Image 1 (tube, rainbow, N blue to C red):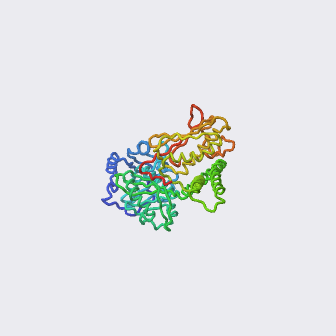
Image 2: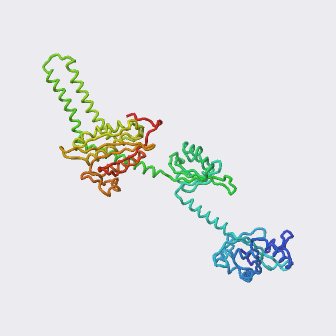
Image 3: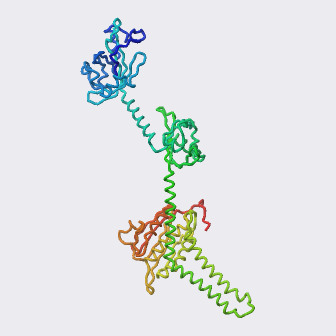
Length: 523
């Protein structure tokens, strides 16, 4: 705040006319000018003794600045109001004290009347006796510096956070030249401190930088920010997937000043996501194999019929024509055609099994629902007969086209149908129970329902039905419904149980209806 008590024998010893009121030797005139200035200024003007820095005078601004009245502050030593940490700094001429053209400027903390400390910035100079050169008093002009100091401290804290964060932070000029990178950005992109000045395009893949130019920067200019995912690249050319936030910074008057980019490296997250998808695909594949195992006896029965037919046709030919030297085609045509048809039917069963159990990446495409349901009900028919259950397709929407992956859709339906069949099984000789499918349009979605006449769902089980390994069957694995829900959600739909008053169980799921632009299935 204030000047040291040491004499200054430099330019201040001989006042010049340009130094204004500080060169006046007439105390009355000086006091009159000070009083006029003090009444009009929001800064505090004060005079102090050179020895102990006691207030000789303080302008009225002392009240709103420090809370003291003029009468209370006069006679008080400034050293008594300094923050203890700042007294020693001032006496040692800390960097916060600067000298320029005969004036000392000092920033420090000063105690207010209520006990709290506020930041002041003071400019002071000595007034000397023109004859002896001794210091007569010190004149000080002080202003509130709290806002500036707090802003500087905040900026320092932000700078520390900027350098310590794991996010990649980049500042650029309006022409997309890099002006600053934090440590994380330099390390992740394999850059050195000389990089600022390079063009921003050097940090992104061609597609990533094109997205910035076409979407990110225009959006940020209009709305202040843009966020999205794209790819950066390091100096070695390796790509880095990132989640990016682009901010446009404007001046107080609204003029664009610079851009900042905050990027979060998604490499680990993307790798974990890919690993999770592979794991889910393995689980789904295993579930299909387990389902095939559960249907093995029914499938064996279904295959046994055409194989037995083929053997019978061929043995009939053997018995009839085995002892003949010549055979006419007309005599062989019918049994051979039946043999071929029966073999193709057996092959169709095997191909359907292979398609269902094949492991491949999902392909979402438009497909007609009815053929898929008909094929699957035919596939499940032997299992239903073995459990004394009747399957029905009550879907009347012949033109319903949905967007799905055929294998995934078949797995969803198969899990629900097999569960319904097992819930409805009855001993042979009793009246069979039914399992049927329904469908209904709801806006842009199709709701598909699998219903049965079984005992219904256990009470209070709806919350646990879709948990992995939860099952109500004696030999169940508890994976079917969990996988089915996961598959439905991957297709953008929902799967839930529905209470029915007439008894039995009902599971509903939704699929998006295909529009004219959706690619059609090639199956």
